[in-house]
Length: 309
Figure 1: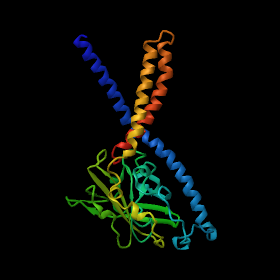
Figure 2: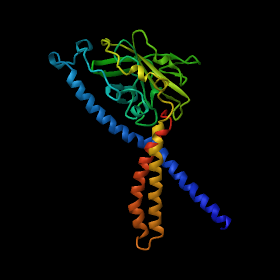
Figure 3: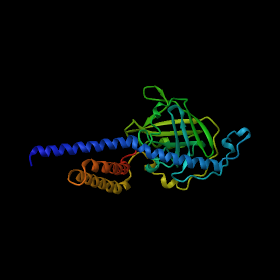
Figure 4: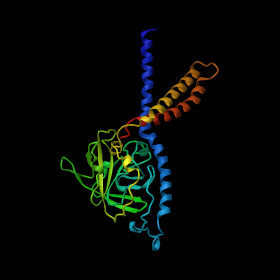
């Protein structure tokens, strides 16, 4: 075989590999948002139903009840349950928060650290979320300014927070602070009622964490029982949920990758080698199937990567 044929084959392989990598990047930035959007729709319906089950009768004129009027005996959320709606109007963020910060749960939306108090209650309620993938609920967290409003609606009522000021190393006042990825201080109990929002920093990187804190400006809700599973989930993984990958994804990632390559080879063979199937017909039928398999493959490959951006 002439050397130029070898070089040509290597060049074609690299071009195809580059296209696959570009498709994977596109999937990370936009494709992951599709599954998150579906999950948010499901969680929204579930949370609305739960809210209607625990909310007492409205007061005169149809006004909403305050936190003190809501029964204390609300259900203790299980991991994955919707616990509330987090609204950051300044940055146009409106998402349902799930209980737990496991990587699989953060794909559905922002996650509440179960070892911290529930939003609206006395203490420090901490929530983690993505900035550039899976719907990017905290994409513009760095744009929040001191005094900006934050609203959280839970089964205990609606609670208003105000973003706290932070001073950086240069003496500038901002609405956030940057900490190391293993800084556990952001989960420690706090006096009063505080909300802590955490995401990766800078964007497209897992080097640091951006943290926004906000102080409750409305009346707090009564504390609820600590979930039975808190001791089991209080590990390094849940202290920094945005690090590491899911080792359980190796088997499906390899399986779907092999199947995708096999089907693509079949399409190529039918288009180039088969005398009974027109080239255009082979690609017209096979390409959508390959893209669907590739999307499924990317879903599992993404689970192997640190879900930190």
